[in-house]
Length: 149
Image 1: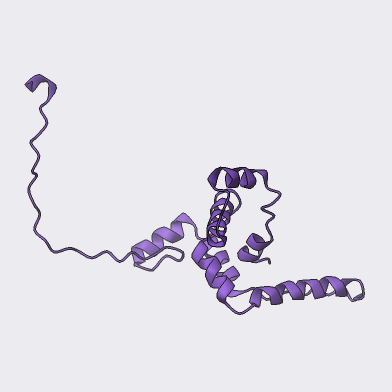
Image 2: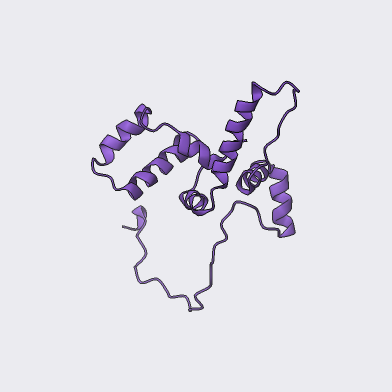
């Protein structure tokens, strides 16, 4: 199974007419970081969901993705010489199994998780704290209704 980020890296942005047209409208001199943000935005909107932070984390990790790609190439090379008919299964990376589990949640499962107070995978936990200040009264006068004028 191909990783989300591997598919993103192999996507041909140079031949995509929509991306090239949008790139011309945005800017002619794009910094590498800005170009990456544009590519992530385009890919997220038109191809499949992807996050910049996840992609950067994936790039910073040791090259597990390239190992899987090399295994696929070696399997493809061995197919011509291997007559036994065995099927080789490649191990899934942690990100692939995590996204596969997240994508399979049904509404009923999410509802049950909310009722049980469990954390829903894939959602950001917001750090909301009360400000502990007394409410203030409104300073603006009430707008007159049409029949009160």
